Image (cartoon, rainbow, N blue to C red):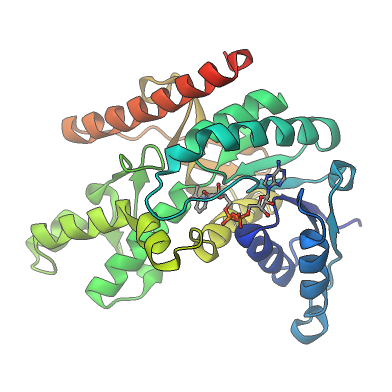
Length: 320
Ligand code: A3D
């Protein structure tokens, strides 16, 4: 039986970490692709040389030609540029949109049956453009942000309550940006919703608001510390969980930037919503009930994403 093939388009900080995690988990053979010569080859060789120590049997290769991704089951896209201190995700739009056009053409030609996970920022607009440039089915192109944002929220909550991260679930909706919507009502410790924990005296309302704000600023906090780029360990781990859900047909319920065709009153946009990911890609979009303030926050976030899509169309009118 042939192994799965995982193509990583972009072999920078996240790409290299993705390759290492995919290999350690033996998800399949890994192809690292980049326009920078030597980087994907060097990272592939370095990780392959750790295989005897860690005991994984997968093939790792590096390439500068899209032909190398031929027949990939999963493509994870990080090609482009990351943020530097003082930059917002939206500042990356012009450069990364051109990159998405090239990546979309490469995937269309060599891996049209793949499940494509986009990580490049500004996420919700880039995944929308990538789907259009590649022409792949909308349920097979998805953006990674919600798993990361909710994992950040879970980490902060577990730390605050001094409980295992395993017992904390968290829910984040909306675009991957300053307007993301962490939902306290749907976030729990072992099934107990956060508003109940406030009543039980585990945390004050004010402190919970601080944690929610820290979650929203989670990416910027790391950019400020690293100074040379943005987060990569947690983003890579998050995308790998989505790839695994697809490859193993796990039907996991994960928040992702999914294509909406009327759900939540949104048409032809990618926005962060709960989805079911299995062997059919994004098999379902789950529509949860939102109260007035949650809906207002969600709509505001959608408005921000719509603005980015308009900016993309101004640069590339063929996206319309
Ligand atoms: P970085 O380490 O710079 O890697 C990007 C790689 O893309 C580099 O190796 C470049 O050579 C390569 N590249 C540039 N142009 C092309 C091209 N046309 N074709 C192929 N490869 C190309 O960045 P990174 O890995 O830290 O981050 C990658 C992207 O992920 C950035 O846009 C970040 O903003 C984004 N990011 C998103 C999240 C989300 O949660 C959505 C989190 C963290 C980072």
